[in-house]
Image (cartoon, rainbow, N blue to C red; front, side):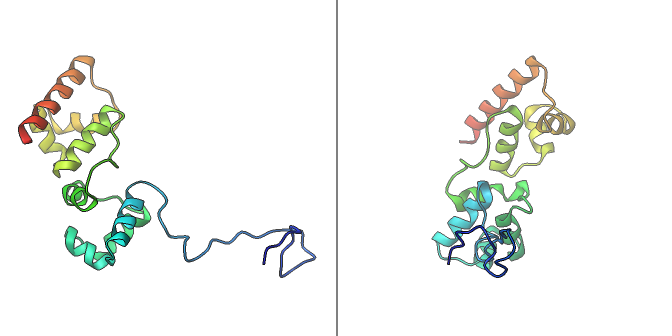
Length: 153
């Protein structure tokens, strides 16, 4: 029954409305990786334990990822990408996004990426954190990412 008088149904003398989250839908993810994981799991008719076994994690992690409380570690990136059937959910707008995406797709650490980019781990961490490289470094990094991508295909 809808309250059309802007009064509380249980306390009609109060001129307040109360908003309560629907407990059935309040926990559902609404965007990004959490939503994609949840929707894919439901579409396949799987429970969290089954997905956890497929991805090699504890079932509690699936709940944390779906709720958005925690993001997955980079090492789980390749299996998540396979489970979802693509990597469109990874952002690519900035160099920092592209570096994180590149690492996530391969399950690489910052140190591993640094080796392939011929730089140290600290530089990768700084760049992923938003500190821009010099224009010459940025061009070299972008070129190296494309080379590595071509080699690994």
